[in-house]
Length: 271
Image (cartoon, rainbow, N blue to C red):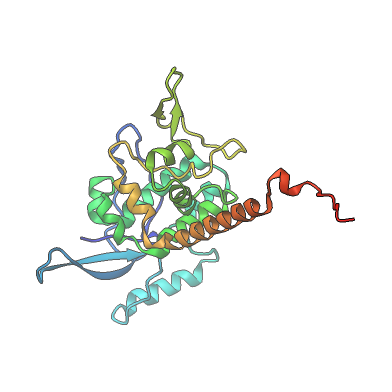
Protein backbone atom coordinates (compact mmCIF):
# COMPACT_ATOMS: atom_id res chain seq x y z
CA UNK A 1 0.00 0.00 0.00
CA UNK A 2 1.39 3.36 -0.96
CA UNK A 3 0.42 6.70 0.47
CA UNK A 4 1.32 10.15 -0.69
CA UNK A 5 2.35 13.53 0.65
CA UNK A 6 1.32 17.12 0.13
CA UNK A 7 4.56 17.95 -1.64
CA UNK A 8 3.71 15.37 -4.25
CA UNK A 9 0.40 16.83 -5.22
CA UNK A 10 0.18 18.47 -8.65
CA UNK A 11 -2.59 20.88 -9.58
CA UNK A 12 -5.88 20.95 -7.70
CA UNK A 13 -8.61 18.81 -9.19
CA UNK A 14 -12.30 19.51 -8.72
CA UNK A 15 -14.35 16.54 -7.67
CA UNK A 16 -18.08 15.98 -7.48
CA UNK A 17 -20.11 16.28 -4.31
CA UNK A 18 -23.18 14.45 -5.55
CA UNK A 19 -21.78 11.17 -4.31
CA UNK A 20 -20.24 10.39 -0.91
CA UNK A 21 -17.37 8.73 -2.74
CA UNK A 22 -15.38 11.72 -3.87
CA UNK A 23 -13.36 11.24 -7.06
CA UNK A 24 -10.21 12.91 -8.23
CA UNK A 25 -7.52 12.40 -10.80
CA UNK A 26 -4.66 10.23 -9.54
CA UNK A 27 -1.30 11.87 -8.82
CA UNK A 28 1.43 11.68 -11.47
CA UNK A 29 3.04 8.28 -11.93
CA UNK A 30 6.42 9.62 -10.91
CA UNK A 31 7.20 10.58 -7.34
CA UNK A 32 9.32 13.56 -8.27
CA UNK A 33 7.52 15.81 -5.85
CA UNK A 34 7.16 13.19 -3.13
CA UNK A 35 9.48 12.07 -0.43
CA UNK A 36 8.99 8.31 -0.03
CA UNK A 37 8.86 6.95 3.50
CA UNK A 38 8.77 3.22 4.15
CA UNK A 39 6.92 1.86 7.17
CA UNK A 40 6.18 -1.64 8.41
CA UNK A 41 2.67 -2.47 9.55
CA UNK A 42 1.95 -5.63 11.54
CA UNK A 43 -1.14 -7.32 10.20
CA UNK A 44 -1.58 -9.93 12.93
CA UNK A 45 -0.19 -11.22 16.18
CA UNK A 46 2.09 -13.50 14.19
CA UNK A 47 5.35 -12.45 12.63
CA UNK A 48 3.72 -11.46 9.35
CA UNK A 49 3.87 -7.79 8.45
CA UNK A 50 3.08 -5.48 5.57
CA UNK A 51 5.49 -2.93 4.17
CA UNK A 52 3.77 0.37 3.44
CA UNK A 53 5.30 3.09 1.32
CA UNK A 54 4.04 6.53 2.25
CA UNK A 55 4.91 9.97 0.96
CA UNK A 56 5.62 13.20 2.77
CA UNK A 57 5.11 16.82 1.81
CA UNK A 58 8.83 17.35 2.34
CA UNK A 59 10.74 17.86 -0.91
CA UNK A 60 12.85 14.94 -2.00
CA UNK A 61 16.58 15.22 -2.09
CA UNK A 62 18.17 14.27 -5.43
CA UNK A 63 19.67 10.82 -5.74
CA UNK A 64 23.32 10.43 -6.64
CA UNK A 65 22.40 7.90 -9.33
CA UNK A 66 20.36 10.43 -11.28
CA UNK A 67 23.01 13.01 -12.08
CA UNK A 68 21.57 13.73 -15.51
CA UNK A 69 18.11 14.38 -14.14
CA UNK A 70 19.55 16.45 -11.32
CA UNK A 71 21.58 18.58 -13.70
CA UNK A 72 18.54 19.20 -15.88
CA UNK A 73 16.44 20.11 -12.87
CA UNK A 74 19.13 22.47 -11.60
CA UNK A 75 19.36 24.16 -14.98
CA UNK A 76 15.59 24.58 -15.12
CA UNK A 77 15.54 26.00 -11.60
CA UNK A 78 18.31 28.44 -12.44
CA UNK A 79 16.43 29.58 -15.52
CA UNK A 80 13.29 30.22 -13.55
CA UNK A 81 12.94 33.42 -11.57
CA UNK A 82 9.78 32.41 -9.74
CA UNK A 83 9.64 30.39 -6.54
CA UNK A 84 8.75 26.71 -6.97
CA UNK A 85 5.11 25.81 -6.37
CA UNK A 86 4.21 23.54 -3.51
CA UNK A 87 1.29 21.18 -3.01
CA UNK A 88 -0.18 23.51 -0.39
CA UNK A 89 -0.29 26.54 -2.67
CA UNK A 90 -3.83 25.85 -3.89
CA UNK A 91 -5.14 25.45 -0.34
CA UNK A 92 -3.25 28.52 0.81
CA UNK A 93 -4.62 30.61 -2.06
CA UNK A 94 -8.22 29.53 -1.46
CA UNK A 95 -7.96 30.29 2.25
CA UNK A 96 -6.22 33.63 1.79
CA UNK A 97 -8.97 34.71 -0.62
CA UNK A 98 -11.62 33.48 1.86
CA UNK A 99 -12.93 30.92 -0.62
CA UNK A 100 -13.68 28.38 2.08
CA UNK A 101 -15.81 26.18 -0.19
CA UNK A 102 -12.90 25.51 -2.55
CA UNK A 103 -10.50 25.25 0.40
CA UNK A 104 -12.70 22.51 1.83
CA UNK A 105 -12.63 20.63 -1.48
CA UNK A 106 -8.87 21.00 -1.75
CA UNK A 107 -8.43 19.71 1.80
CA UNK A 108 -10.47 16.65 0.99
CA UNK A 109 -8.40 16.07 -2.14
CA UNK A 110 -5.16 16.39 -0.19
CA UNK A 111 -6.27 13.83 2.40
CA UNK A 112 -7.19 11.35 -0.32
CA UNK A 113 -3.81 11.63 -2.00
CA UNK A 114 -1.91 11.61 1.29
CA UNK A 115 -3.74 8.43 2.33
CA UNK A 116 -2.17 6.54 -0.57
CA UNK A 117 -2.72 4.92 -3.92
CA UNK A 118 -5.63 2.77 -2.76
CA UNK A 119 -7.51 5.84 -1.53
CA UNK A 120 -6.84 7.64 -4.80
CA UNK A 121 -8.16 4.73 -6.86
CA UNK A 122 -11.15 4.40 -4.56
CA UNK A 123 -11.87 8.13 -4.45
CA UNK A 124 -12.19 8.43 -0.68
CA UNK A 125 -10.30 7.61 2.53
CA UNK A 126 -10.82 4.62 4.79
CA UNK A 127 -10.50 5.37 8.51
CA UNK A 128 -7.70 2.81 8.72
CA UNK A 129 -5.63 4.78 6.20
CA UNK A 130 -5.46 7.97 8.26
CA UNK A 131 -2.60 6.49 10.31
CA UNK A 132 -0.37 6.60 7.23
CA UNK A 133 -0.68 10.38 6.86
CA UNK A 134 2.31 12.04 8.49
CA UNK A 135 1.97 14.36 11.47
CA UNK A 136 3.76 17.17 9.66
CA UNK A 137 1.37 17.03 6.71
CA UNK A 138 -1.78 17.14 8.83
CA UNK A 139 -0.31 19.90 10.98
CA UNK A 140 0.55 21.92 7.86
CA UNK A 141 -3.04 21.69 6.61
CA UNK A 142 -4.46 22.50 10.04
CA UNK A 143 -2.09 25.45 10.47
CA UNK A 144 -3.30 27.05 7.23
CA UNK A 145 -6.93 26.71 8.26
CA UNK A 146 -6.30 28.28 11.65
CA UNK A 147 -4.09 31.02 10.22
CA UNK A 148 -6.68 32.14 7.68
CA UNK A 149 -9.70 31.96 9.97
CA UNK A 150 -8.43 33.71 13.07
CA UNK A 151 -8.21 30.37 14.86
CA UNK A 152 -11.86 29.52 14.18
CA UNK A 153 -11.40 26.66 11.69
CA UNK A 154 -9.14 23.61 11.59
CA UNK A 155 -8.89 20.02 12.79
CA UNK A 156 -7.19 20.99 16.05
CA UNK A 157 -10.05 23.42 16.74
CA UNK A 158 -12.53 20.62 16.11
CA UNK A 159 -10.53 18.29 18.34
CA UNK A 160 -10.75 20.80 21.16
CA UNK A 161 -14.54 21.12 20.79
CA UNK A 162 -14.92 17.34 20.58
CA UNK A 163 -12.88 16.84 23.74
CA UNK A 164 -14.98 19.40 25.61
CA UNK A 165 -18.10 17.56 24.42
CA UNK A 166 -16.75 14.42 26.12
CA UNK A 167 -16.10 12.95 22.67
CA UNK A 168 -19.83 12.73 22.00
CA UNK A 169 -20.23 13.19 18.26
CA UNK A 170 -23.88 14.26 18.35
CA UNK A 171 -23.04 17.08 20.73
CA UNK A 172 -20.00 17.89 18.60
CA UNK A 173 -22.04 18.05 15.39
CA UNK A 174 -24.48 20.47 17.01
CA UNK A 175 -21.67 22.63 18.42
CA UNK A 176 -19.89 23.02 15.06
CA UNK A 177 -23.14 23.53 13.15
CA UNK A 178 -23.14 20.32 11.12
CA UNK A 179 -26.62 19.54 12.41
CA UNK A 180 -29.61 21.86 12.44
CA UNK A 181 -32.48 22.09 14.89
CA UNK A 182 -35.80 20.98 13.45
CA UNK A 183 -38.99 22.96 13.86
CA UNK A 184 -40.75 20.35 15.98
CA UNK A 185 -42.42 20.29 19.36
CA UNK A 186 -39.79 17.89 20.64
CA UNK A 187 -36.20 19.12 20.34
CA UNK A 188 -34.69 17.27 17.40
CA UNK A 189 -31.70 17.74 15.12
CA UNK A 190 -30.85 16.53 11.64
CA UNK A 191 -27.76 16.63 9.40
CA UNK A 192 -27.46 19.64 7.13
CA UNK A 193 -27.70 19.12 3.38
CA UNK A 194 -24.41 19.46 1.51
CA UNK A 195 -23.43 21.99 0.30
CA UNK A 196 -26.28 24.51 0.48
CA UNK A 197 -26.99 24.36 4.20
CA UNK A 198 -23.39 24.72 5.35
CA UNK A 199 -21.70 28.04 6.04
CA UNK A 200 -18.96 29.04 3.60
CA UNK A 201 -18.27 32.48 5.05
CA UNK A 202 -16.39 33.56 8.13
CA UNK A 203 -18.64 35.75 10.24
CA UNK A 204 -19.33 36.26 13.92
CA UNK A 205 -22.26 33.86 13.57
CA UNK A 206 -20.21 31.09 11.96
CA UNK A 207 -19.86 28.24 14.48
CA UNK A 208 -16.35 27.58 15.70
CA UNK A 209 -14.90 24.46 14.11
CA UNK A 210 -17.44 24.47 11.26
CA UNK A 211 -14.71 23.79 8.66
CA UNK A 212 -13.16 21.71 7.21
CA UNK A 213 -15.95 19.19 6.73
CA UNK A 214 -15.61 15.43 7.15
CA UNK A 215 -18.32 13.18 5.77
CA UNK A 216 -19.90 11.38 8.73
CA UNK A 217 -23.15 10.22 7.16
CA UNK A 218 -21.85 6.65 6.99
CA UNK A 219 -20.32 6.74 10.44
CA UNK A 220 -17.82 8.65 12.55
CA UNK A 221 -14.81 6.32 12.31
CA UNK A 222 -13.01 8.47 9.74
CA UNK A 223 -13.51 11.66 11.74
CA UNK A 224 -12.56 9.83 14.91
CA UNK A 225 -9.29 8.70 13.29
CA UNK A 226 -8.48 12.24 12.15
CA UNK A 227 -9.18 13.81 15.53
CA UNK A 228 -7.19 11.10 17.31
CA UNK A 229 -4.22 11.43 14.96
CA UNK A 230 -0.88 12.03 16.74
CA UNK A 231 -0.67 15.37 14.92
CA UNK A 232 -3.25 16.74 17.36
CA UNK A 233 -2.14 15.06 20.58
CA UNK A 234 -1.14 18.46 22.02
CA UNK A 235 -4.81 19.46 21.91
CA UNK A 236 -5.57 16.97 24.68
CA UNK A 237 -3.11 18.71 26.99
CA UNK A 238 -4.55 22.14 26.18
CA UNK A 239 -8.10 20.99 26.91
CA UNK A 240 -6.98 19.37 30.18
CA UNK A 241 -5.25 22.58 31.26
CA UNK A 242 -8.30 24.69 30.41
CA UNK A 243 -10.59 22.36 32.32
CA UNK A 244 -8.25 22.46 35.32
CA UNK A 245 -8.16 26.26 35.21
CA UNK A 246 -11.95 26.32 34.95
CA UNK A 247 -12.31 24.01 37.95
CA UNK A 248 -9.88 26.08 39.99
CA UNK A 249 -11.70 29.27 39.06
CA UNK A 250 -15.02 27.73 40.02
CA UNK A 251 -13.65 26.57 43.37
CA UNK A 252 -12.21 30.01 43.98
CA UNK A 253 -15.57 31.64 43.36
CA UNK A 254 -17.30 29.13 45.60
CA UNK A 255 -14.82 29.69 48.42
CA UNK A 256 -15.06 33.45 48.05
CA UNK A 257 -18.83 33.46 48.03
CA UNK A 258 -20.04 33.19 51.61
CA UNK A 259 -23.62 32.98 52.88
CA UNK A 260 -25.30 36.31 53.41
CA UNK A 261 -25.37 35.76 57.17
CA UNK A 262 -21.59 35.41 57.20
CA UNK A 263 -21.05 38.48 55.04
CA UNK A 264 -23.26 40.82 57.11
CA UNK A 265 -21.56 43.13 59.59
CA UNK A 266 -21.78 41.73 63.09
CA UNK A 267 -21.93 44.47 65.76
CA UNK A 268 -19.70 44.16 68.77
CA UNK A 269 -21.73 44.28 72.00
CA UNK A 270 -18.77 43.58 74.28
CA UNK A 271 -18.79 47.13 75.63
